[in-house]
Image (cartoon, rainbow, N blue to C red; front, side, top):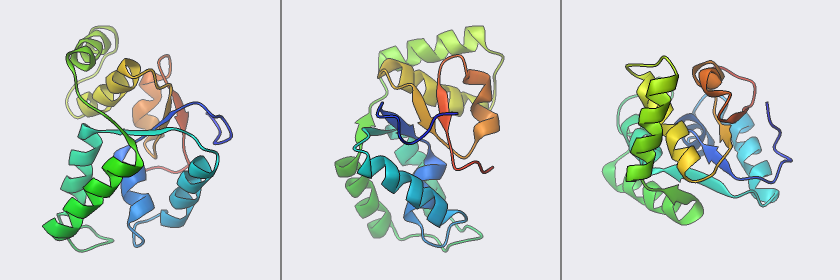
Length: 153
């Protein structure tokens, strides 16, 4: 497991983006502190169009810890994230990397979303993933290094 003192780029999973930006979310303080530590260390932070879609899906539906966000607020947040983070687009190369992962690692169903994040990271040369879903991404440990607040989703 990596530390936040490493200066190499970091990809933020949806659960990190969500919990660092929704004050009523579980682990908000811990996740926010970790993201701020990365910012203060001038670490290059990445998200993807997939992460933005997943964030929108989460904040615009009822959650145990929050009411749905209005479309106006959610849209404003996405625009802010696009300004704050490097945003990886889904390209033909991402799809090629995804298919290679599918051929080499036994995955299916919802795990495809995780594999697509790893494929995106590979395409953009990002080795570290900040996530709360350590168990879900362990299968990709030959390809990425995990960074977390040591919590489960």
